[in-house]
Image 1 (tube, rainbow, N blue to C red):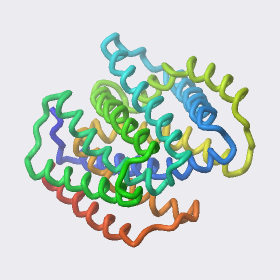
Image 2 (image 1 turned 180 degrees about the vertical axis):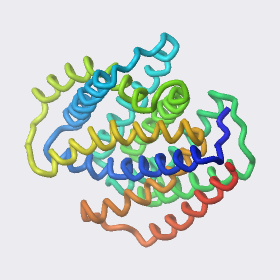
Image 3 (image 1 turned 60 degrees about the vertical axis):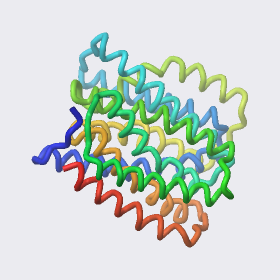
Image 4 (image 1 turned 135 degrees about the vertical axis):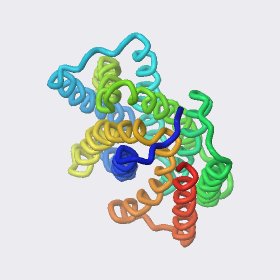
Length: 293
């Protein structure tokens, strides 16, 4: 059952999920910085290696118990969707898309996550919840298509693929976080990918040019530590407390925060439609939160 709670645990879960969204909102600008000095494959594999080593150290320090056989199956979904699929596809997309454009496309993630969770768990939500979720998704979809001239680009196709795999990873991770600590969910998923990521990093660094600038190093460190490990740690804890669908709606604020970072950190220029989209999405967040209760 994916019903949200209304006690202190629910308030803490909402706070944790919100902090995770702030961390995630910096992912695209940080990836853009990393791409200033690394190729897309190098940036993706190196970020996985750094996060995987950190995750392994935390598991050893905490003497974490090994997951059960059933839990490993869920962790494979988390690893494929959240650890590998989403970072790789979005990094490839950001070679041609601006961070602001990518942010509004990925704004569809709350709807895809809620839909996957409902299908996976059989959870039911009020019609108002779904109406507000769809409305928020429509706002960001129209905004994205308007920016790209009315037709999806190759970068959009990468981003839409990232939505599908990430929704599955988020939903499975939120389910597993009810059985094991949230930090262990993402930590085991990262460790699971570490051997392949290490080989991939060696091959990518040998074939792609590398230029170690301050932006490139800072961007890589943030996506590895802030987004890939710490952000997902608190995100899964938040989802375990308030439910996957309700937590996912908080991500409607993520593209708006990313727009702010894209201006502040990358100097991108926003269109006049951005404040209108921001207001509409914030209204949708409020409606989904009230309907979820």
